[in-house]
Structure formats: structure tokens, C-alpha cells
Image 1 (tube, rainbow, N blue to C red):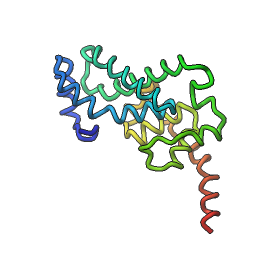
Image 2: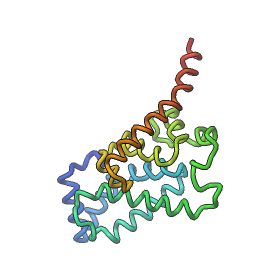
Image 3: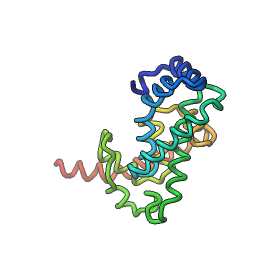
Image 4: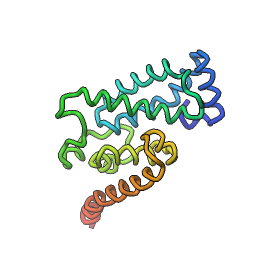
Length: 189
């Protein structure tokens, strides 16, 4: 069952059942959200193993603290936020040279390994060349299809800030894509 297969009412019921100790309900949530959370974790750090480990730890945290979630409708935001925290915490523990793609020179970040589920290698490489916060915003909005209000919850920033930073990230992505588009157009002529 994919994340899209869970409608909001069913998700709320699954969360409430999982809060009451229903393991199968928690497994349904895991099955629905795990692939998206791993993609998001990878897009934050650019390290597949770190992302997998962080998401696994996030699920452990979610399983232990799920009963404290007051509103079942907030599960999706809470899950993404938990992954974000775990990736950030784990990346801080890495040696300084491997902590973040943000520290890489622009060309090295763009040449980094592309995740296997990318719809476009070029777009993925361009996104990797952006600063971490911009990558997160674009990934959450376009790739994970979260609403702006949900992104505000995941990133712990006001809605207006999400809007302005998303516009800035789009502009940076367009700037980086311009030379690539121009090169591709010239090579086709």
C-alpha cells in the first residue's frame, strides 16, 4: 500500500488504532510512508545509507512516542519532521568532510550519485547543487507533494516564510537550469 493509497480518514483511523497498540495498523502506516520518508531523508543528506539508518531510527522513535500525538491528522507532518531531525542529528555525528552536500563544491554536488527513483537525472543533479534548505523545500513541495502548511510544520517555520523561501529556491533552480538548458539546446542543433 503506497502513501497515496491511504485516504485521510483511513490514515486517521490507522493512527488512532496504532496509538492503542494495534501493530497491524502501525505496519500499514510504515508500508505507506516508508518509501517517501527514505526519499526525503536521502534528499536532505545525499547519503543513501545515512538516510536509511535515519529513517529506521525515526520509525523507532515514532513507534515509541505515537501515543503522544494529540491529533491523528498531524501524523504525516510529524513523520517527516522526525526524519528531518534524525538525519540532521546523524549527519552532525559524521566527520566534518562528509557532513553535508552543502560543503561540497558546486560541481561535486551536481556530480554526486543520483538516487535510483529520480524521474530526471538532470533535475536531481540540479537539486543536489542547491543549499540543503532549498533542496528540502523543493523535495517536500514537488516530489513529496506536501501542502505549504504541512511544509511549515515539518520545517518549523511560518507559512509566509515557506512561500518566500520556495520562491527563492525556484529562482535558484531556474538559474542553475539555464546553462544546462542552453547547452542541451546547442548540442541538439
